[in-house]
Image (cartoon, rainbow, N blue to C red):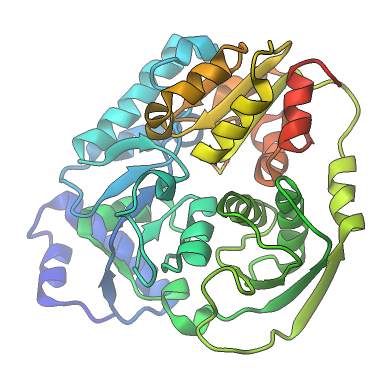
Length: 389
Ligand code: F3S
């Protein structure tokens, strides 16, 4: 990989040991994937925040680093609501460790918004054509597909390296030649809401790490695109997709070789696939709820009291910008939790069964939380929380 004189001096350790180590990560990645140089990134989103996932070794690694991030950098969800962790049943030891992780990032200048939906709270992080170094798979998918920016799916260390160096190796989804659709997915059904999560599960399974181009009947909203991308990134490892006449187009017109035809029957199977038994926890907000989603939940709960634990996960900024919605939701007895989610928090582990409206959460909850999961639309989830099922 060709390095500039400045980059070479960082490699020699002339800017300190931490930056040398960060550059080592970027150069190693570039060499593995055949990048010929590093490119500037506009922003970074860093996974590896929940203490549940990174443990002592991760905390130590981050705490050892010196320096300051030189591009806007934001964190992925942590293992708890940083303010209301006691209400989540998080124990004091975990909370202390989690706060140390967040403080270690803060010391490096990272913005302390712990969210997988940075695009819902800041416009300045990504625009069409920008190169980024984002980590969280649903955020990566949204950035590549809906915003039309360019990012690989970074690991926590490589994202942090990009934040401190301001660059990433030029390979993968940064290059137009790797952004062409590989599969055409036709859907012969009108879809809405959680249907897109079900479609994402099916499409991810079908294309694996490919790039699907969807031909849909309707026009999905931004929240539905968010849901679709998140589920595909979980059931497969899709980092980029296209929806005809909705998202930015592929770099060149072409018809993908492989065709997958899906319809209502396949989508409904995903909803039916749930094992029997009442959920003990209903968890919404995977990816983190937008203002519109909070509005919908508040509307469905209006004036009623939940009979079961209901979590609504969102970014702290989103909650702060809409206190009236938070209040309305919480009047029902539900909890609006910030900075965290049902998958990355250890608090989910004490339930036997969780109901979600997200294809991504449905895919990850059993394996990562050791808890059964079932799937329903937002309306069905709220009905379950209200004890109407
Ligand atoms: Fe976000 Fe957690 Fe889902 S990080 S995409 S809410 S698994």
